[in-house]
Length: 376
Image (cartoon, rainbow, N blue to C red; front, side, top):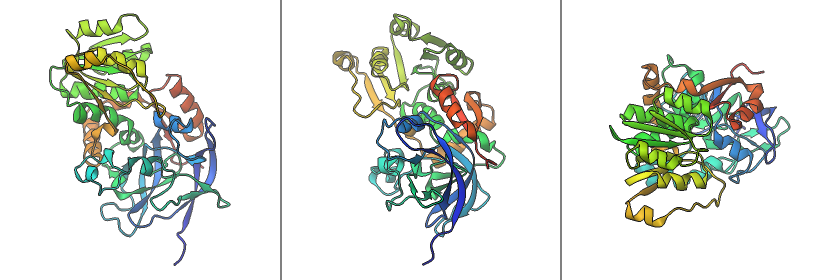
């Protein structure tokens, strides 16, 4: 059997814990089985890319990260049926498709989720990306590793979108945006007239604000420490904004909501904020948790407050979304002018990937998107 053909690519590689990304020449093998090879037009940068760089989760390095890719299908494996070269796609997380969670439509809770998205290789333990001299680079990050000019994905993780949609903008729908919006719509099921609280007005949090407005929430409270983020949250649907550095902010939330929020979303990954979020809930309120923390992070809260008030804490992964259905829905809502996630995005040339990371960590940029297409 002949070896798969390789394509020369440029990839952003992180080689050690906390090290900057370096753009390097590399090689990507041809798609096999149900894989597709995608020419990356643009890719979002998510908090998860940075915490893997910093080894919050133990993905092996050196690696090619990136998991909010959008691009054009260049080639397909022999088992691909629903995609063809030239199709526009948004890349999203990997799942097995046959475990009990996947079969029940809960693909973000696939029993093999961690290995498929953070394992650093394919199902067979092999990588698809190497250096020009053949050294291995860990990849298959969220079934794509899209910090590169080309990426391999599986048919089930490459979501076809209309060619009329602005492809360079759409990558963040594959993770961060669908997480925030999906948490509101699918996980918490925010209801019309309800009281919604978002803890952290980053890209995920403001996506949740956009979705809460769509869902008809009557009161939407955004909590953050960055004034510009709070101002944008109000422009996009929040009815109130609170700086969590101010003393008594939990009581302020309870006053605004008339006794506490019905629904809340914790997107900061900070245990103290989670505990305060529980305190800010009203009776039978539910707090969804999407913020990523280092493995082993513990949180403390008042057990009696939780029990007596009938409050709930719910873990949420990828917004409980079924990407093949939800991503096209978000694209359509955006094209109708009803889901303005473009207000969160700042574009950067691919070569400025480290500046994008620094701006994101400093709170200067909500959602960096790297313009990859045409990079030499």
